[in-house]
Image 1 (cartoon, one colour):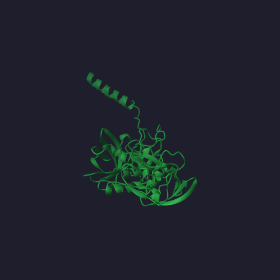
Image 2 (spheres, helix red, strand yellow):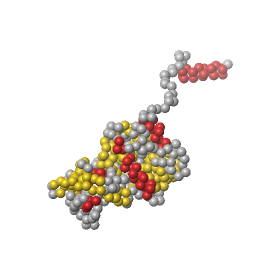
Image 3 (spheres, one colour):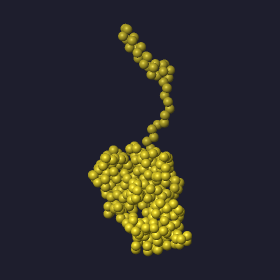
Image 4 (cartoon, one colour):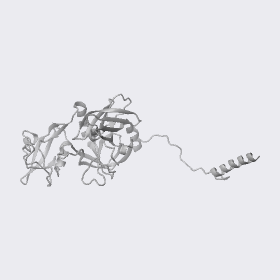
Length: 356
């Protein structure tokens, strides 16, 4: 009897402790699970369509390693990302790609270009690939809603949202050598969608789930005057390579393994502090204007200051390079050039230079 009484008392005690005694158990109200889909143009709808085509990239080589993002271009397994994401692999490193579903695959470099900070890599033996649709960055307007997808700090599949804050921001990204040879000059889309280290190479999507930019650089607290991949956190100043430029470069990398760069055939004085872009008084080989080049044919001379491109003011050598690289070789440009205090207009056809 003592055993039975003890057991019964234990059950009653447990009931009293669990359900608050003999009073009615508390049940908090909760909505039923919603299994319905989301509107295609909502952030959730865009993410659902895009995530299967976004990959996380891990790179190891030469004692260095890093994480970045990329997205699928086609069913053949080509993936677009930033050059600075895959650069640590060098010629003997390893590139590993992880898809949103968890599948992993090794990748090889198809082609990369430091001047545009873009690279195409390729995976083999992977089925069910989901290429992302490409939009048109010329259609983008300030204030348009955008969605960024990437792997900030290796947190794969992270989705953030914001707007296009500005267009045609002249920035530098990628590597930085003293002679400027590995600096990427970008006429960027600016966004306040949170972007952090690891987002590099990921897509910036429009409301139709189309890629309009390649997230490539941020300005973070403590960056000073530089914009780059930095290790600081997002303060709402992110920059993306416009997809129209990225598409052209990607096609060239796929078809030839290298990209062409539009040039005007002059060297610039990057230390010039005045307004505009000044042509050097002499170049590394003694000539600041390439004989027979586009600038020479247009009558540009050493010491000239280029003030405008197609009527748009440029305030530095960096801005001029950005404007030039936003075009294709063969495009015709109108330049406003100042010499001895007098301005004149000249026209030239952009020349072409290959990847370094």
